[in-house]
Image (cartoon, rainbow, N blue to C red; front, side):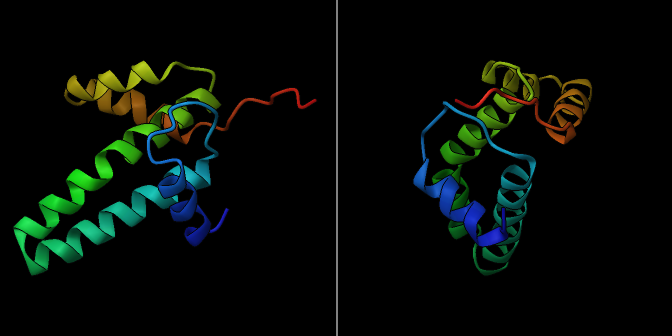
Length: 104
């Protein structure tokens, strides 16, 4: 999946917490939100905050779909609230290759 496709898919599945997201979709989305946050932060903190607020739901959704791709529940994202240890665990899971699924 390309950078543009990833952004398009994440915005089209704005609040869709079902299904799976491949690694490239998740990481391209993460790069996009990081770069735009930095760019808008240079312009204005308020604009950066509005962008972050607008993208928090699709970010949670793509995170849940990425965890589904590794056969885990999206609820595991609550590990973000555990400093360092939770972050490391989630990072490892997000990096892992997705599980093979049976396609009919």
